[in-house]
Length: 269
Image (cartoon, rainbow, N blue to C red; front, side):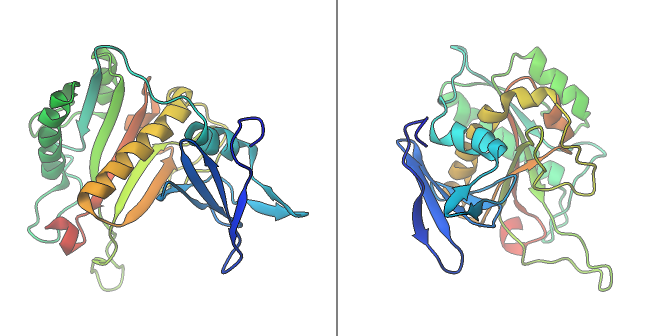
């Protein structure tokens, strides 16, 4: 805090757990002792390691200081080239249908393409040059989505998806109550992922997109906050993962947005 000229941790509460706030001119980070969940300006983010209280002092893991607190509290803001280029990636397509709406049986691939086509003119109105990795119901490999972004000299890459719960193994029914927005970026090297979905999670792995850890987080928080305000759905947080193949090889800030649960009737409507 002293090195970066931000406020020292301020104790907010003791019950049910001790909570501390750290503030700068950019915003406020609230941390809870023993919890991986934190908030940045009211938006949930996930730390790699839970903060601890030792001998009267608050301790955070060095990677969380470097990869979560510093980019948001005191890092330089995202900057872009003069000719701002963004690649929007409608997830799935063709035979890769994604999940399915509990209401009408339509596939995720249809919703992601519709979302991308609605976003394109909005972004163009705000000065962005926009490219879509697919504009029709075709399958594009994750590797080709990465190549596409590179070929179009993307400043940013955003992959669009929708979520679903798994069917109960006994009843065969979906959990229709789970809801909310999740936004993912690549897990920093040395840190555990928030979610693995059964995939290996090698902490020591250095991925091409790890060069943009700080910018990934800044982009994820900004997009996540904007979608929350617009959609008014539950905040399930900015999360880290290594299994998102479409993000791993990107050479610019890149995120993946899960825009709600198609297994939830209210969000699928």
